[in-house]
Image (cartoon, rainbow, N blue to C red; front, side, top):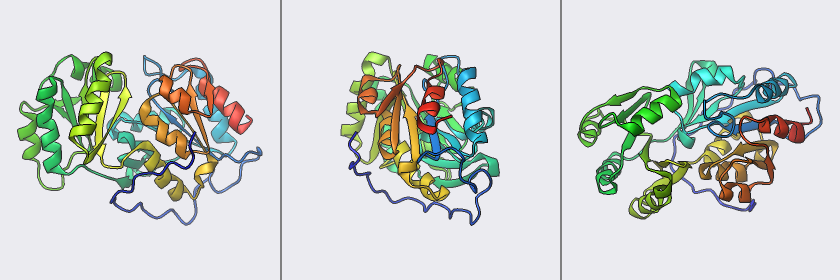
Length: 303
């Protein structure tokens, strides 16, 4: 991978200062000799299978990793409501990147927001209006809420996939326009059949250069604040934890994971990843649900 790739600078809220004394296990060096200290994984189709479950082999490996004094967390497009429970279930012991990099949350500290970036409202409303020209369903996210104009197959699919509940508001453009000042959108999802996704991404990128648009699943095209990505958020998280980015291992499966993989010292892709993701990886491990994360932990951390 090209380690010289530059991240797009953005005007963001400053990350909160790193604690003066990090809690265990961050305060002690791991006994195993490796230059890596943190593993960050994408969730859906990387760590979680189609049933949204992690395999026992991977869960046991993550537990060994944390018990050995290393750090584990995840980066996802999901919001806080859909990830707080997973943070505990997966055994994560550091703040998580959510909303595809638009927010970093410390779930172990009452959901404290370490970093956040939102969308400019006027441009966001124009993007919502554009969804009708694309003849697609769009979902908007603000704080803990996800909103859509109506409950259709795509909203149902999202709710079943994430266990989140979507607020059906009727006229989404009108609803977002009426939100009080300070309640701004964090991201949008434009849904489509897999064969239409890349075309929608190109249209969003060409029509709305003031935002970042990226493919996140075969059916999701996501629009984010300009410059926001999992990779950018990972640099913020590394600084917060007092780590160098080359001390991080990152693993994913979709195009929105590539920048995170490039920022990390070791970028891995699961076998079921998109071809473009595998081409960007330093290493390819087993597919989701078949111990690929455990394999990566063994290779990178020696446990």
